[in-house]
Image 1 (tube, rainbow over the protein chains, first blue to last red):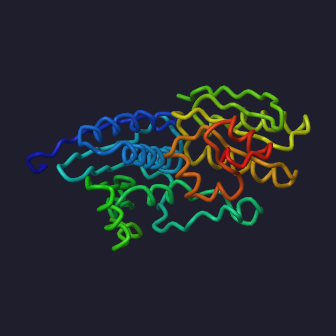
Image 2 (cartoon, helix red, strand yellow):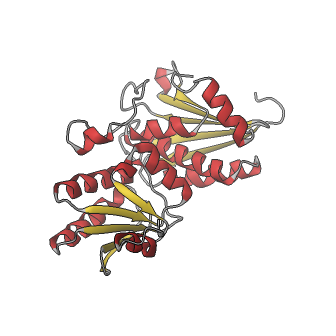
Length: 165
Length: 121
């Protein structure tokens, strides 16, 4: 099913806040095996924590009887992360605005949207996978294993983070 | 699977220091808010949130800190944050929190800045 050379790690965690830290540690181990730099590993840990937290809170209503599934696919040049939740929270947001922290502090803007914004700033590709409604939501993130300078150049040259994947 | 965070309040020469030991997530809300309210009740003007470098902070934790910033602005308090790893300094800048709280590597450097030692920052 997977091209030769891929390594797939799959986790099933209870939909309960706190368990996202297991995904966080697992992805760090996988990212180190792929020789990602330490700062990029921190970015990936934060991104997967936020994505799992969203899946727990909004995708399955923090109901620990439900499961959040995390699939880590390690390729030679990238780490592909898929996070599946039961979809109990309905249709997820497909667009993310920059958090209006000034508005939040002045009581003019609601708290929220911070997690998705942080994810999109930290990884190369991020978005909900369209379709498969019967199986719940699927959120996908991709992080390419390239030199830091090359990554910045690619990210500034093409904005591939805004849409769905 | 909530993790306990240990939050304590101490008074230094020119600031009240709130030490945070543990993960700053939604589970930390009550402890952080209690510590902040305690410091405010004692008349704190300068408040330093001192993080432990390797602890985990997520967006729910950042939301708690935004709530503190909101209260601090109403009370004309100055907020400073210390001990953050380079990664979380980046995250705090990313979300705009550094508009409202200056970051310093250590409590000592934050205190020196408050005491007018410009070389500290």
